[in-house]
Image 1: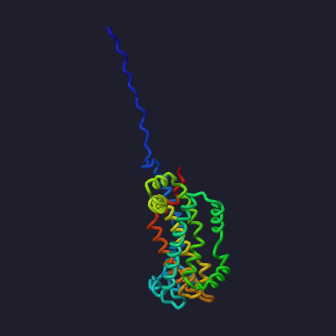
Image 2: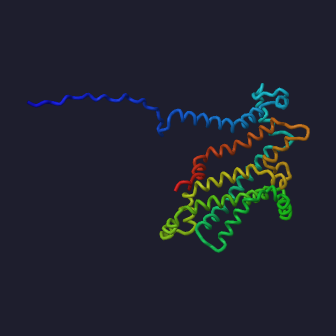
Image 3: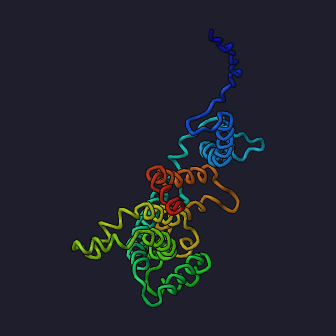
Length: 300
């Protein structure tokens, strides 16, 4: 006669309450805290621009009121129309001048920095480190400390008060940054890629423009953006070199609305908003490539 062992019931432990997670396994509460912190930081950075926008649609009397308000009592959108025909400065010509100087200076920087960065990254020639050191040294110089010398130089060349002078100045002072950032990208490309292309019959220019250029495109975009923004915002050299009101960029034209006894703040704010918009649009168009260029090389 067989005796069966008594069966014991196993009691399952109480089910533990599962925490809610997002797709990247981060608790919802932590995500909300991060979103709130990011929103606060965003508001802190945007608040000056918001106040500047509200000021651009106010009257001069309302801006100078002893009991100021953030929001305008009446929205004067005509300020954005009347500011283009003010007697202080020919604002349409100033906008054209800013665009011409920034665009052509950026193109000149790109045309010079691209082959220079490729050559210094691919070839070890005598004086290579000295050349790279001098490139760094020039980055430490600013137009503000060299304005008197630049004035005398372009006066002797007959280029004073011309767009060409400011194109050369902006290109010279932004060339070192563009060379360094593109040099690091070219140096990160294995030389075996160039050698394989040359074995297939490709020349140096073909290797540069058809093989290397697509690989370093994020670095080129980064150099273009920072060069363009620096040329767009340049002030000190333009104030000295460009003496005709129509040739001056927006950064200098903006000061014409600030007088000794009276300031047209609504136009100051309006011109500032107009000057910001092209740069914002540029960042929006190439944001992904710019972020890729800034973070490339950070992970091996």
